[in-house]
Image (cartoon, rainbow, N blue to C red; front, top):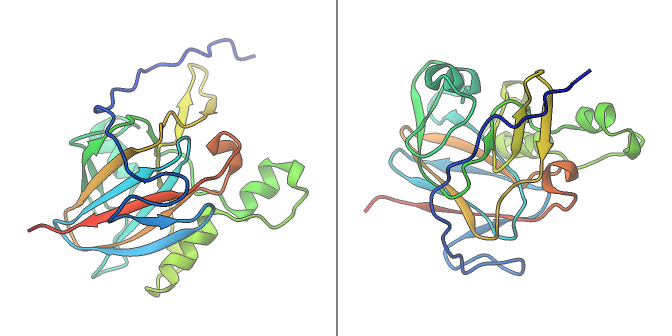
Length: 225
């Protein structure tokens, strides 16, 4: 029987920053991912991708492939191995399956992200959420499949994502817990691409991961001057 439900860490985010967008529309210069959908992007080396939660308590799944070689993809295993931690924050590098740096985190106003859970799929809802009774449900996996299909990338290559803003922790007995995202409206994570990337980004579809309510995700790509 589990007796040790002690949270083993305290997040250390950067300072919260204001954001001109909200529930009705993104801030000028930002694009919006509608609730329970996703998008595919090309991110060139040196470009910055800023991911914003415009409403609060919303997760975004991030996955990436090398733009020039789709046999190279983001590896949560390599990333956690080389940092010796399952948590990432400012200054941390995201590694590929070939141990090359794909991106670096340059800003983080939250300090809470997950790299243990795979993107939610129809199977996730069928196996873990019997209350849906097998009904078709939007999922991050399906949205990533659609996003990468435009780049002729097979769904079999999509692996464990960086679940931006997702609050997953493990107690002393090894049991996983999912708490509501600690984000406030306008919280953000910014990544700098260290190689040319094809990126899939979602506004997570699993109600449980988003405190019962799925909302949009905003993003912006900044190109070096």
